[in-house]
Image (cartoon, rainbow, N blue to C red; front, side, top):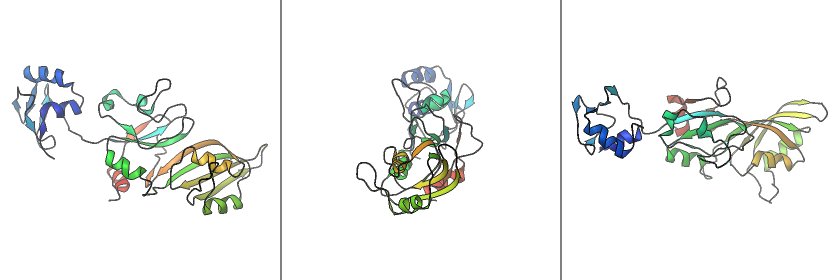
Length: 243
């Protein structure tokens, strides 16, 4: 990694603002490789140099990757004037990294959401040319049958005339209640607005519960309760990057 200003590195790690860091450095509270420094503009190699603040070692991390099990009622955005956002679920120590959700889940949709500050990875996952698959588990009002599976596999025409890419529909269970409820899994390769709900509306059925369980190679961790999150493992990250 290229060398950077010390105050930029410390600010990225949430130690303080640029103005606060100038005071901290002048107070002799910062050490680089065991030596007290008094110049906030000192060029350092954040991954190679040992940087300490008040005797505590600072582990530099350029990018953060979090898997969140998004609950209903939370907005997939960085800020919102009325509702809680997914960033409001995070610990304060993570907010300094300027994380953002990769794509979006509707307010009433639960499940897998990736949060990161890695713009290149986000672009790769969201690029329409990549057709990164996304799999959803859903409960649908109505009897979902073989005709629906075949129609989805050919490409459903949505309410605005757009024909969706072929999608893989798996019918897990049909409960003949009043009304009947079908449990399904659906894999799509694009991300149009309310797409899953609109696909079922096209066959006169209504999604009553929707959860995303997979994005690309990344599977929702079943141990994560709603609203909980964790960092991606090295293998999970390599899978998303196609390494």
